[in-house]
Image (cartoon, rainbow, N blue to C red; front, side):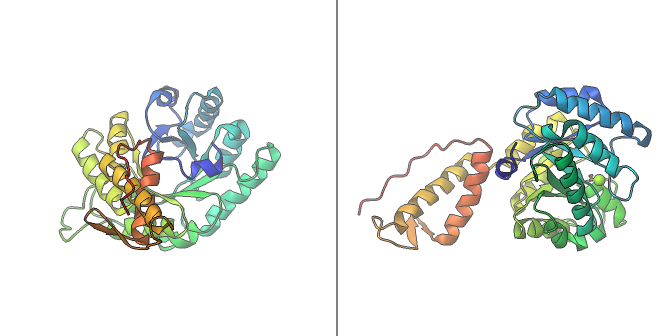
Length: 322
Ligand code: GLV
Ligand code: MG
């Protein structure tokens, strides 16, 4: 997909696929996730990494992932693997790839280093300059402290992702249940500051904000509850670790049909109201509701998310009698 069209594509569900499993790389083709990432990092044992790189290149070249956004998660810059991950995957199948995901991102320089490596590889392999996007994971205190600088570090940056498992470990949170509130913390949401900081950095720099995994894959209610929280804040999507989580993520991160219809109605009604024909008014009533420019901006967000999720409007705007 072209970088400009990726910006408006839906990323409600982002499926994690271990690069070491040819079976799962294969199965992912037929699943209904908006996006997927082929993993070279924590789902792959150190000695299996070279083979996982080859599996990923072969799977990408075989194709068949349809309209899904396809990303490869490389290892982070503190390991010995990052450069070879990127060189081999982009060298082997760079034209089949949407983005590279950089885990445990801690500084803007780490994003710039990846950007420069991608620029050289695009030149060497005759790929359009800037074609490959970057996704960063924020997974520790230093990364969160620098999240604004990270968000601004490269034009390639498309998404900022919360990595709760590594984050919990890195700050010594007293819980092993990823996604759940830590036992003993009974005064609100222990992740609120982290989620909001990521979301603010994403919005300030026009990136997408993606929530991370929920590890209890059989707990559908728990997944929906946690997903609904980040969706309510404004996050654009969430990781799914199992095919059974896909439908829930697609549902939770898409606007409800009635909200989508209402947003479209606001846009049309406001467009009409501000026109000469509609009286060139900046604030008008729509039913019992006062709408103005701020309402239009909120409606634009819901409308864009709904369209990206494939919703079709079911209501009609009738021009009010003068
Ligand atoms: C994901 O990478 C996480 O650490 O939660
Ligand atoms: Mg992680």
